[in-house]
Length: 468
Image 1 (cartoon, rainbow, N blue to C red):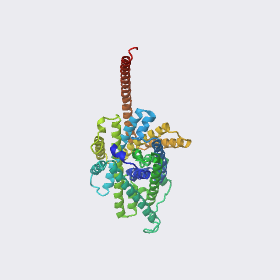
Image 2 (tube, rainbow, N blue to C red):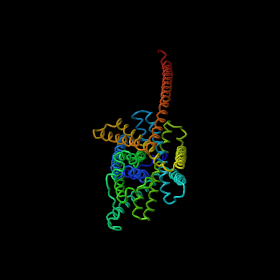
Image 3 (tube, rainbow, N blue to C red):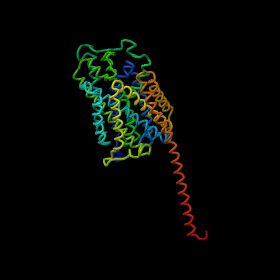
Image 4 (cartoon, rainbow, N blue to C red):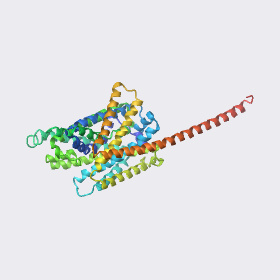
């Protein structure tokens, strides 16, 4: 995770694509999609299609900035170049808080998956166990993180493909009776579970399923050829979007709409409905692997980001400290403290915590995506199509954000995210005064230093040429 290891690591575009699949495909998809189904029915496929386009346009904006000029710190650095110190400061802290909230939602999801096997044990026990395991992986450093994520990416993609193949065999009657489980939409209530509003309110959960592209942005600085960043993102997001939409479509066909539960993965619901008990247990194991992969990605990125923020002077310098093995141990300790808070929340609010935290974390993440898009509009020479892509991305993100206001269960998460934005905004305003004072002091010292130097030089010239 340290600079030394980061500098040694040079990725090809396909390695970054594989790493991106590992970071992206996690609990946001495997559990968050169940909430999206509850709100939007079969039209969840439409919102995943829209979210895929919106996510691609955001990553494309970031990838083109990387291709133009690769920077350590990635999107936060571009915000600073585009809008100044205030943008880098607020962008970094919004991202850090979003990932802390997302860590909470991932720990909760992992607990829910594991309770499928151990229903009598409390949620926080599993959350604490997975948190410890995740920290151990992060302690392996950048190389260990990449190795783990690449392996898990293959496992997750293979599991989704196996589910799709099984679903096709069941639906076509190759396995079991002819057409034993083919639940096509029975009316508009199945297509639009909550009317057209369901599309709007479910969009945030579809976007959340693509969370992880920022981690790829952080790792893209290690590409052998930064100009291949756009190609890497295109391959990764096209593959992930196809896997998402096809597998969700199959799950919807396998089980009746009223069986889907927001607290259970739609894939487990579908497999339980066709009564393949053994496969249900196997797939639940895959869900845990997928969720743990996303947890490790978030742990890695949030710790790396805090170390970068501290190194740039936008957080206490203590969080920039590195161990002999180049691990930012103080930043990691801060991340652990954030996870402990998340586990306590899971203990106090076990019923609705996943939805609340998922909404708040997803919204904070979308705010950071807006920074990326606006920075690209300032730093890149965009074509007409480039302007169109960035505008579509902004509109889709704003639609997802505003949709949470019209859903009772999502609204608390929106208020939490707005409260955090206000706090960060207030701190940024206070810091701007400090930065201005520091700049004035720095300029004054530079002027005084320059004045002393000029006097000294004048005296030297006099000594050399007494005639003057």
